Length: 447
Image (tube, rainbow, N blue to C red; front, side):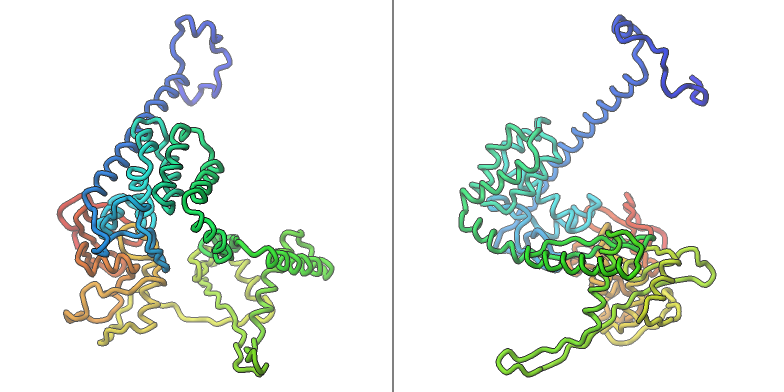
């Protein structure tokens, strides 16, 4: 068939009753059959993977006394919780890191995924059986396992008994209600504590990582109801005033502008800290300004870049920010990221740290995405072996992967500044500015 001239839809196709009487199978039916076969194969692969991970976990069980068990997270605030709930085996943290690299996941993502599989296999046996039989979707069962990890053993069993027969069609709202009921039934003290501590989980997040060329950022949060009403009234009032002063933007845009103005107004104030007993001012917290790092090339002004978020930005948006009243503009020279200015000391000067974090945007471990600014700077060749403290001998490693490297479970070397060759029990990887590449080879890459 000539695809260049064929119609998108064949309006002359035979009626359904004629096709049913032995007409040739249409291309659409063939495609549907192929899609069905592919989905069946994909489901088999998913089932095999979680089964193998469960068996792998059984091969890497550690005792509670050893202190080597993997926990749910180490992102700044370690919960100390095992990757699965009470009654499930503890799995070696270093082994989890090795498998995480093989799976192509970040450290937190890998811990979470492996923990879900362990939770499912050991604490939700009825749901696990239905998964292995192909009667419950793997992805849905893993998400249920994620919700039950903090429940007591009996509570997890309660969820498993009530959910397993309906795992294929149950909604997430039903899962959440069932998990809450299980906690109240089997651990009322913990349920009350959870209710009481909920206030401590209030947060207000500004996602600067998603700032794009448009120059906007997403804001979300959970506030106390009274605080939320005060914020709503303040933003509504200021947005109304902006309109009265001649701002022609829509109400939604004026509300977003009002939030920024509230922030700038607060940052411009010097805050006095007074003694509650005497009322005397004990110290003053001076106002401060936020530094926005912007990169613009004199040769190419098509697009700029925000250094704070490493995202592109429109030059017109940069001009708007620069013209904002009260803005101070500081022009800094371009930093040579390939420069070599070693020092003899073990301590890392700020200028070298800035050079390395600008060169390597994230942890140098395979597939890790933790920002370089929050990582340790590791001497690739140890300083005690005579190596200098120089950008060419430094790499950012998040705390967990730094521990893994220090323990000798995986090793790496720098091929060129910003390019690293890692070797571990489960394989070899090349990490460079373009990402992580699985080498699938026993010989190291050419230098």
